[in-house]
Length: 387
Ligand code: SAH
Image 1: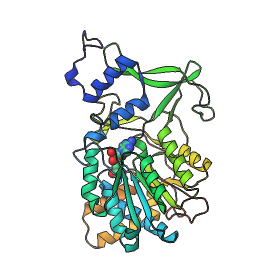
Image 2: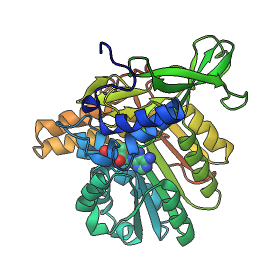
Image 3: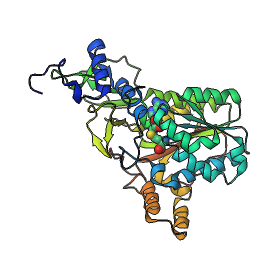
Image 4: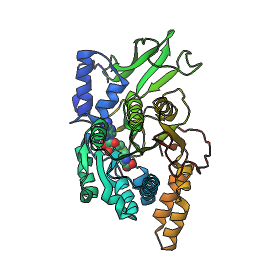
């Protein structure tokens, strides 16, 4: 960009969100990574999720329920079985966080309809920021009269006020929550910020030292260049759920990609057209996500008194719930090759089988949920790329 300064960058090449952010940085200075991620994904007029349906071949990425109907069916049977194990409590508040197109819930409820009492007890809550995806969810799930909420807190408050059991489901929800990043530099951890380079491009920088005690680094992590990620919203959500499960029966199931270990390193990534993209480019026009730190979420939920199951790999979890048997039955009935290939992709280590993990939290002392006790975990290195 020869001869351009921060002020005269060509506006026409920028996304609306990038223009907005540029103005904010010029007015208020560099912004933390978490603020960038929150704006880029959920700004009401210019955010990524708020302005589009990102899934499918013509979109930017795909998710397990969009790959295979078996995923949602097994999740539905998982909840149905656990609800029966708890004595079929009613009402049953089922809260889905970030339901996308509603495909997962539609497949799950079709499978759970095996027991009509489940549907009769069901009060469905959908937590969604995107008007575009809300409309898709209304098409897929309108017949069960869901209630929509703009954030998890309001869905949980509604369920809490009305009593009954609480089931929560989030597939690829936690990875969309804003992360903060901290880099150890010049003797201290400093928050990673996004500002403007002299040529007007967005660029990473570092703020002042953060007070000790804020980030609780793993042992040995304080060496020059170490990067830590923290997801305060995810940790607060797990703590809130653990608190609810002190007095209420139910279960929360999270499936997402990430690590079972509390590691270090930069996992922030952008996805566009099914491939990785530079994270500070086309802000608001491409997906931004980060690996879920299951170890920290697990520790947080346990510290608040909940029982935690897993994390186990998605492949082991789905196999324990009967993935192969279900795929074989569909094959016998002449299901097309796509359905079977999709089922394999969910569990295959080269697909989503080991990078993705399942973790559940519930009340201490309750019957264990299906799938976790028999899941034979196959440890595998956590890869950075998203299939
Ligand atoms: N569970 C779906 C979609 C996953 S994509 C599936 O498996 O296909 C993430 C979903 O979370 C989208 O529906 C997105 O709009 C929603 N979302 C992202 N950030 C959110 C937030 N902060 N609050 C509520 N919903 C959010």
